Image (cartoon, rainbow, N blue to C red; front, top):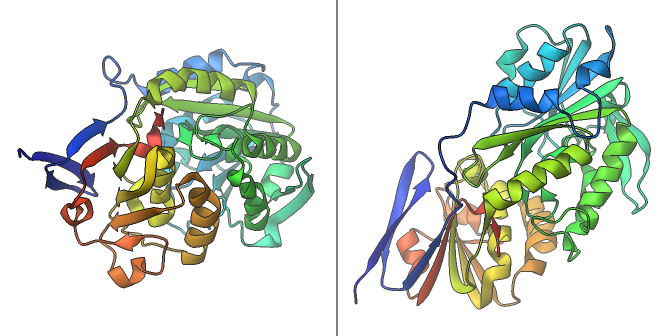
Length: 384
């Protein structure tokens, strides 16, 4: 029987395997032409905000503005986002806050793009959701989530949230209100919100019927009643092809409407699914778990998900990966009888402490499979 060769990204290199199985390969739609320059997209969005006045009309000279940017676990055009906002707000007292959520502070390893600040920032907040000293309690959402956030949110006259809209496995989509909460929230409070990931409505692509999303949006609105959104909109290959600005909820939903056809793909169910992506998603098992979530609904009973991720940042924190991510976020989406194999650069002994099983090679992981579904860029797709 003829064999098929397929090749997948693996950090700075690639990994390949041969198989005689039936292979279905899925990747995101290829949109016409190269992506446009990001800065003009942002300028056009700022000129036509959704559900809001322009950002420069909403602040006065001397106002305290907190600009929220994502941490290094997100691949985003931070320099362009920061510059676009700063050019509109030249006379404010600026705080830039790195939204790390439960990930912990950067501890000096700042995400790329912050060089755009060039002395224009008064305060740089390297948020640590595990340290209560700079956190403020605002209240509790209707669903019982404590709203505890960094004081840089509460003390601001305006909070400008930035990010890139792309699918998220339980919040529906990334970006939007997520920059504020969970981005600048207390880790324990965030995990209370994240309990909603077990709800059937907490699924990729869902917004207005997603209880987890609605809860975090309520939390963000309580913490930052004066807010403004500037988000890029990514295609299925992580390239920013659009942008939205304005009201935290309305502009976000406009961005979702733009993104949805760019990232939606049909895919068959399978007993063996191989998932891959690029860094930073594949830098750790914590992040690479998103690849499993993207295909969980396609896995047949008794099936296997093979995660191809070099994980140079390791597999931990193991308790969070096993409990908060796997037990709460992944297991309910998977058939009762399943296996998850990890092809990585991590020692087998380290992987054995997690929900995944280590395999030496992709070739070993797919051995004996009759059919294969290979999903490239899985974390960036909505699979139907």
